[in-house]
Length: 434
Image (cartoon, rainbow, N blue to C red; front, side, top):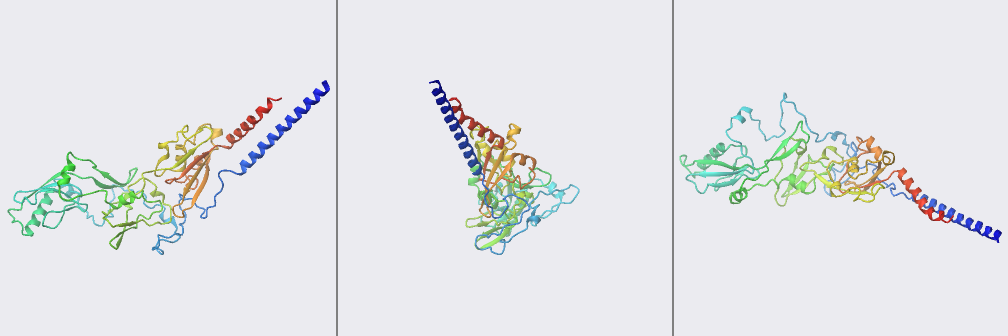
């Protein structure tokens, strides 16, 4: 009986050992298959260039169906490397304005004025002792014109209230409505409107800024009853911003404005560089076309009045240290990034960077983006260590564009640890049988 029991024990142990070997072989086979089917497969990219790399040649593309020979060419972007870059000035050098309509005025004449010159949108009060039909409140329109009854509109932009009153008196006398002794006009400023001022030179964010965006008491009531109107939202730049801003490949020095069959080219470079620019007021029926250069211009990747101020990306952080996006603090505010954010900054926002150096430094981050020129979905993979050491290289640390997707992957050390832990979990029930 003892010999038979010993044989049964040896047979049982042998069968258990065989089952254990089978389980180990199955785990190894499954791990090998999982390793071959890596989630980050290499996607074929016809151009071989990621949207966001500087100093790359342009693509061959077409502008709708009409501009076949104007912009649809393979371009070299080397000449546009510093396009729309901030300008620098010195106080001991003469400053030449690029605005042809802006005549130079001696500084002494500017200081000698007794009042602030008028600008488009200002609310003024016109008073005439013998002209009740002309007295009232008026708003200077977008061109700075003052529209009075009967007579033609008067260009009031840049004039002081005293100069404007003299010009109105002269217009009334020339039209034969009043005699010189009866045409007495008084101008009173009720409210100064918000104005656009280009700022350039040694500032952190050169460009055009909106100042004096305040509302006086009962201003809206006065503007309703006043003659004339002004809007700082019916401008060419506002239409472009309403389309979520220009792309980094936009040709902003030749924006096409079409009105009633006529078209002009508008240079809006000054909005980014701080040079004076003519921002055209728009009317119903206008059409705006922003051509493309086919080149990625890094100086356009920053917040401005014609570029996005911020955008949203899709983030996923399901690495071992963060079991979910909630525990990784990947929420609403971390996925809303300012325009000009690069991949390393987005990875930090997704909490992919930091922690234990030996296990977390080899982590990888995936960026999926759609090239707006070729409409191809491009996927790149970068290690965190690579991003940290080569953050100044645009080919390794590219700009993040709106609606991009970012995902974090754990390091090989963590993956190996999880595989070993999985094998131990599978073997634990069998070890209890021995």
